[in-house]
Amino acid sequence: MIAPLSIPSPDYDWQILELNLFGWQLNIHTYALCILLGIILAVAITSRRLTQRGAEPGVVLDIALWAVPLGIIGARVYHVLTHPNDYFAGQEWWRVFAIWEGGNAIYGSLIGGAIGVFIGCRMTGLRFWSFADALAPGLLIAQATGRLGNWFNHELFGMPTDLPWGLEIESTNLAFPAGLPDGTLFHPTFLYEIGWNLAGAALIILLERRINLRWGKALALYLIWYGAGRAFFEAIRVDPSEMFLGIRVNVWASYAAVVVGIVLFLVQRRRHTGDEPSPYVPGREWKGPDAEVDSEDSESDSDSLDDGVEGENLAGETAATSSSRSTSR
Image 1 (spheres, rainbow, N blue to C red):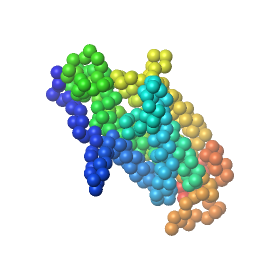
Image 2: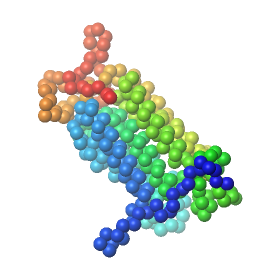
Image 3: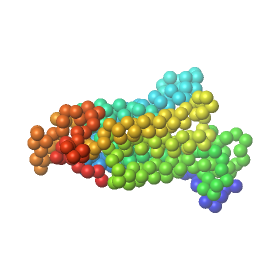
Image 4: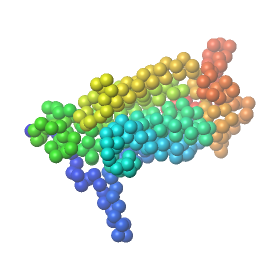
């Protein structure tokens, strides 16, 4: 029975927007629009945060040109490898590349995107950790936006529930569990993850005003927060998934994200006790129109590899190694 506050699934007509351009039929998937909007938001937020920290305005686009395509490729590869029966059980070989039919994994996107960010940072001179920290809240907002696409697609919902905000799913849906009566409500995992991701983005921004979250620590918090939430949301989903030791593969991946995040935070907190002197590696700094930074003011070579501990002055206080250092906001 449908509850008064139950969440209806959108009409199927909303899944694809049909445009007729000069007699040519163009089908635009709403899911793709949600992903695209998420990418735009992440780029805009990251750009603003990097600029506030002293980076060249617009440099984020140079990195996005690498990170976005490799992130999409990584998302598809991860999905195909974790759902082999959907692609290697006699199906046409080309369906491996049929990304428009759905099938993108966030953890694959993170791996591919990280490779793209590394390449882009090497080309622009930005520190990898600086970019990753600036990206962390925007990435959560992008993921929250992308989850709306799952709602439009009537997919990735959770187990049956009696809660008043249950999600309405038609019994003709291929993912509808067999044996359940018409009108059964399901956990709206898309909505849970949207709320969790937005809360995580807000938490990172608030914590940045109170503690040092540079040198990869904001990224570490992202991994811990997202991994913990995703482990739970993944565990209550009813869609088929590859299992390992009785646990869904993506749950294991979520556990791994939490562990990596904890290790990264502890290691970076120990190795880098001071403020981040610049978002750029030494010798690659961007000097704006009004910049008045002399070569003597650049940081020491020990910080060029992002793995040196900042020097200390005679009073035992951490010394800032660049006069152009900006504080986080």
